[in-house]
Image (cartoon, rainbow, N blue to C red; front, top):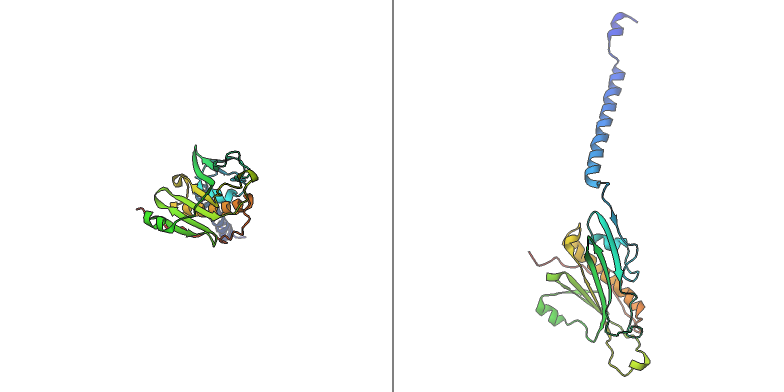
Length: 225
């Protein structure tokens, strides 16, 4: 090898150095971006089962924030006038996040269905939950109500009393606690209401065939500015 050849830089070695420098820079940038979006120190813990086993983590995730633990409570099983000690009691379920309720569910019997004329007069939105269920959304308070016909049997000692042939399901919460938009939370209420309705039909049980929608209706955007 001549002296001139010994003084010449190695082209291959220089190329490899530039290649590795580029790879390292790319990895560092990617790690920074991942840390910014992912924030590994944050975590969300959700109950695996809630509201009479009708709901799971995917149902509750749209209702909560980005870091914390959600806890579900309920007032026992869905008790009908046949089994409840107090026929007027409401069966309830709540999910709490950051100290406050992000989901409140109440299930009760009622003598009447939903009046569309009354809903229109009050400015409430009518929602289609299937042939045998009526729904409405109350915009100002983000409350969703579903009523379905359920001919459940009465106990012998109450057979002469007037029956409440409808089951009323009331859903609300606090959209401000969610990491998602108010529109997404309102849609989650509709999805949850349909699952609760399916559970109620089985738990009561309804002796009539109750036909519900295959999919929850789309909740219109809020009319509030």
